[in-house]
Image 1 (cartoon, rainbow, N blue to C red):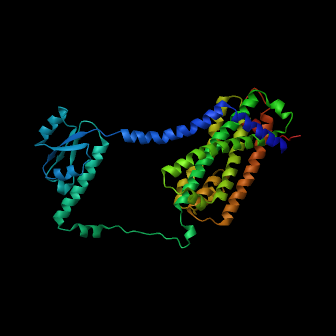
Image 2: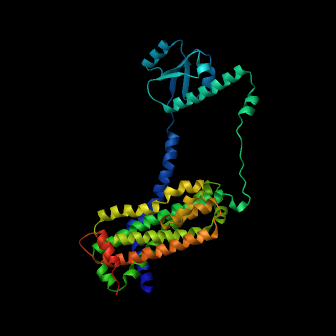
Image 3: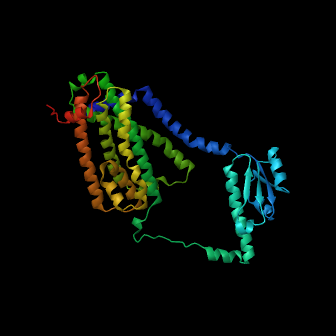
Length: 398
């Protein structure tokens, strides 16, 4: 175990002094901020262009329509369809709306346009619908209050008998952020794990290292080291993000953290990381070049991504059969249990059973990965085939 921590320390210090790691540590939050700020800036500077539409109004509702239009949409009256079409052809209008006398009975209007503009189409459709309802209401001689009373929708208020069972917005938010953080940790440090194993195998450093330490110690040291690197990254990014969240928003961070089930999140998040990390490093030890590692990495990434297939059904029915299955399946349980716990109180036995299955699976995958890692790191010149990997699993370490 002493060798494990020595290797973990070496992995941490080697990467902390790596310029690429430091640059990535600093650039990643800037890139994330850019992705958040860029759409906001686009929305702010992407002002809609002014458009003009002629209206052949044979009903007498043009003033009502114009009052409902945004400022950049102008509706102008036209005497007839021919005159409106001529203005469009001359470029003085973007299209024209034809409102025939039977509009109030059929609700059918025609819009002729020179260029497609979905925003205008939607605004006109909504305005025409509202005007049509108002005109028909006036014809029926019903007052607005009477119509509102007749068409009022039922309101169903759901109240949990036990307040602890009611979904808590703050708890859901913390759980969602925790899942995102766990995935970032898995994909960032997992990729580094795979590339680290690949590099040492390619550079034939493994022969020297494995002459001094056991393969299992080396693998565990790498996993712990890269886990600590991921924690350092997340701590740095959190230290930057939390003050910004507190300053720019009114979200009660401390209240949300108090409402969340942090022990459950940490337990299942850590096990999920260890499970996927063992897969990453085991696969990395079987690859000979970066291209093959990239292809295999995609296959490994698909396993934690399986949880997203169950998110919808779990949110809709946290205690249904699908939710319970996903809670016990080890490659999805570490995400689904966190989601279910955020939306509904879970029986203790379900949490215990899911945790036990996940622990057993993580130990089994780690032992298998250790065997693959031990043999694969000493195999040079080719990528391992599935048949060879199965043969490696049968070897006994002396």
